[in-house]
Amino acid sequence: MKLERNLSSLDYENKSTNFLIKQKQFEYQYAPLYAERLVSMKKELSKACAHKWPQYEVKSLVDLIKHDKCVIMGTIYKEMKNKPNILKELAEDDESSALPIQPINRDAKYIDLENDQLILEDDLQRILLIDATNSNLIKSNTLCTGLVIALLGTENENSEFEIEDYVFKETPIYDSLITPKETPSKSDKHIVFLSGLELGDGSKTNEYLFKLQLLIDYLRGDFISEASDDLSMMLSNTIRLIIAGNSLSSSTQSKDMINKAKYLTKNYVAGSVGAIRQLDDFLLQLINKLEVDIMPGEYDPSNLMLPQQPLHHAMLTKSISSDFKYNLHTTTNPYKFNLNGLSFMGTSGQFIDDIRKSTNVDDPIEIMKLTLQAGHIGPTCPDTLACYPFYGKDPFILDELPNIYFCGNQNEFKHEVYTPEYAQHKQIHLISLPKFSTSYSCIFLNLSTLKSEQINF
Image (cartoon, rainbow, N blue to C red; front, side, top):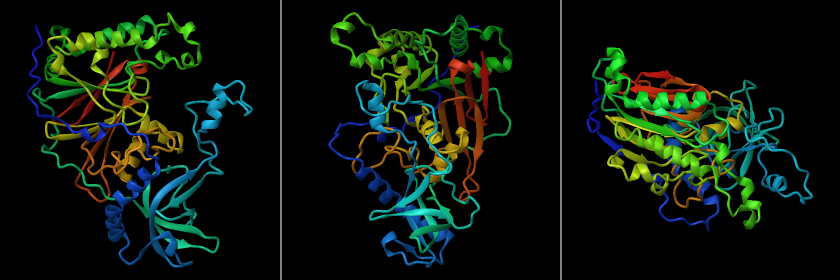
């Protein structure tokens, strides 16, 4: 039995234009980015303040009067002594440095629960924040730098702002053109999410290669004649694969080669070369059966600064020269698209991972909720996460919340439905995607019921 798929049966539109960097200009500093973030979000934030605290005046920090209850708006700055320090990182690379060299743990958290402080900044000054209710209303260990927020409270004698309540802006949710069904049917269309292939890791075992080939055969539908009727129908109606970053392993990066003399690297072949060939072969086996969207990740050959730009076609020579090259789509990270009347938005994990380091929250779903509540997917850019120095715009601001929000390269699969307080009739599906390299799994999403399933190999 041969697998037949109608890949053009659903309407698709790439909505990631805002993340494309058309002219690279690095003469700007990052102050304009923070200023633009605050200015752009103030209008919606003011509306949220009016809804929640209509009886209180919104004041600038310079106009505060001690013990006068009011509302202030600004950008959170989190003072963390354990935050990455560029001088320490340079000292790590420079053996002659006079600075004390301490090994840097790239996965370590930056937080210090006893000493971290929250500060609010507006366009003129800043003020230290404390919790007036002693009820952990605003915990310094659950918020991060870069969040634009409104606070209700009073300035005390020590020129600290005592917080009684807070609110983020109310971001509208995309009006889905479909209503999810309760019961699936055999004709329901599906898409597949995959992340963390981590090709090119020499330590990978034969088990990994076997599981990888099982994944390819499964997505191609090569076992469809042996599958149950329900599984056969699901595979027949699977029309798109989204690869959410880290297709290459971290071991393919050769940071130490930068500091070596050129004559020592004359015959050196970067580990990423072989890994890219593996990726090209992987894609070539799939694009004649599926539409494939591939996002760059932290370890992939794209720019470090977010938003990451699409992988260059020149690296995927076999896939791009095949008869099915039109089924391969290299995308940005973050990636936004509309499919079948639904709005999707996803990242390869860097935003979520960086917020995790500067907060005491480990659950990726909870961090994803925070970014939706705040109306910004990358608040820690550019403080602890590198991003392009945009001038006149902040592309990470959410003007509209998606119906499906996914995040790649996490430790486990989770799917949760989130309903904002201000939009009780709307639902957002949050999906945390596990790394294939450790979970040997991918995620199928039914586009009619919006229910997901983890398939293990």
